[in-house]
Image (cartoon, rainbow, N blue to C red; front, side, top):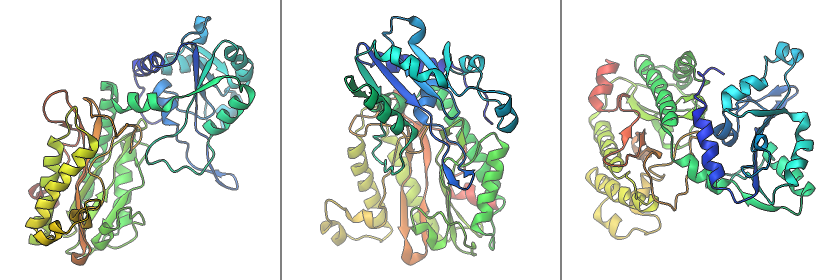
Amino acid sequence: MKYLAINNKLFIKNRRNFMAKMKPNSLAVFNSNDIYPISADSTMPFQQHRDIFYLSGVDQEESILVLFPDCAKEKHREILFLKETNEHIAVWEGEKLTKEAALKTSGIKTVYWLQDMEKIMFELMTQCDTVYINTNEHYRANVQTETREDRFTKWLKAKYPAHVVAKSNPILQRLRSVKDQIEIDLIQNACNITEKGFKRVLNFVKPGVWEYEIEAEFIHEFLKNRSKGFAYTPIIASGNNANVLHYIENNQQCKAGDLILFDVAAEYANYASDMTRTIPVSGRFSDRQKQVYNAVNKVKKEATKMLIPGTDWAAYHVEVGKIMTSELLGLKLLDKADIQNENPDWPAYKKYFMHGTSHHMGLDTHDYGILTEPMQANMVFTVEPGIYIPNENFGIRLEDDVVIQEKGEPINLMKNIPIEVDEIEDLMN
């Protein structure tokens, strides 16, 4: 891994918190992700399943975590099963975790090789009544591939059909949404790397550069600072491309007078950051571009103030919509008749601002969190309003990552990333 070792106190605490929510005499199992094939012998770069990482810090394939807090044998209350390393693997792939290294990484004392899993699982399953399986219940999930976790669940339920089945996901949704300080520090590091990439790009952009060249500048800076790369597929959208919300081709030339919308951010140690900035290709905003930009920035600032403990996510978005409506009236993009005749299910402002303002962020860019439950201190949210005007050949979105505080306004993890018009223009000139 490129990242520095994470204090295993985080993973010890996470497991303790999870086990405290389990039913009596129950067992929970978590699997690594597969290495996914492309074709021939090519594969996608490995990405660890965030849940097993959250609970163990183990960042390699073919790993299984078992938690059984009520087990009679104390050594079987926490178990890691790992792929056995050997000299051949060390030569061809690099050495995998040893039992000693796994203990240092996770704080788990009992580590077995994977070939012993079925035998030990039989012993454990005869002692428990309930088994927790790990399903993906994120509100944006749309998975068509059978995962390693899915296959394991099929095997477990077929082999042990008399056990009661429970779900890990509701527990993890609540635990993962509230961040430990170690996690906040890791997200801050990802934001700091993103800041370096953005400042590099401000010195690089000029008329005639290509969107993919800007993408290359970002990835150069990210890799140089121990990130393994982008936290999500980057958007480098110049001119009217900014009005395509998930534009990822990044293959157009940037023209004088246009704006470029960047939705680009670094990961660090599997933790995401999520930044959007919009800058002028020529180094100066036109008066109209500046007017719209400042309106978006104002909405972002007002929306940020509302991210406090107890806030309801749905009600928050309604209030942000009211602020955006006021700004769109001021920009003469809407008039009073538009408001009077609007469809309550799709308010008038949605013509120019059609996406949500905030989402949970952490190990996943769109992180775990139950949206029907009130916001809490130490949740990390994005704040990302935008105004998109195809008829004027530009779209503007601005996005920062903030940590909700027990009292007062959230802490902005991206406060050092330039955002004001004057800052952007001064740095570009």
